Image (cartoon, helix red, strand yellow):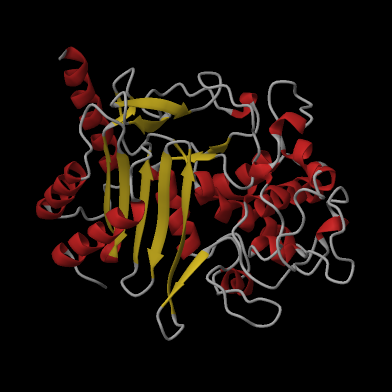
Length: 391
């Protein structure tokens, strides 16, 4: 009982702090907050289980942000807007932005052969090389590096593998894992693409990927508590307890209990510390700043942002559902109505979505593998439409 009381108090204090940060912004109505609270409970989240953090930016600069459930079941640590989550594939837009910053600086082009920067990559088709744009829009045809035998990956750090350890694996396993389709002929989502993009950024910038993204994106955006888990030493030692880090949890039917499945070192030693396709840790407060930066088209030239957020095409002109690091959502007539990304990894279920017609942005960060972010987003949209309406 005492732990639960402490949890309630901590949650309340976390929400008060978060509200103070956005005190200049209008608050959502009590009716909308109560409706969202009820929706979260309906999704099975209570004060004793892993939960979810929700941010919604609405017209008129109206904000909703709140945490529900526990970041750590063992310690009964509550989720607040300050709680950090592994973003999983919601990290990919950051990787794409980092790469495009280098493009804008004239240090590379989207039509460069990837092997100019990653010579370890085997030549699959000399007449049809893999270009950087193929990585950005998932048209490379590369096999999924997750499928490689991890026992064969050389680990220069002994206890964990990094991007550089995987680069030579594509040639080593080429016979068993050939190109999945002719490069540029279709879209197929593959994490290998963004592993390579992060490696290109490192080599061109001559700086660790995590440091480059921190210096060029996180700091300029004011995302002061977001970091990339690239090495055990890259996990910041946070003095303020409110910036707690969530564990990812998976539900075990037989034992009817939540089992932790992911976290940050040293509490959770990681054997694979690849970056680019994932490994960004962030919270609602910083994701709100990311949303503001993307809306303002920071970091990149206007033309570069336009291309990044426009559906890409195959080399024969077929329109795809992905831009450059972003899923692009369109109506039946082909007109774009939004963009965003989802991320799933070891108990974490996340999504970021910007709807253009209503000018709303929604961030959902969850540390429970049973969370259906699509269904939750749809339900949240219905509630906001009911209590607030569009722009």
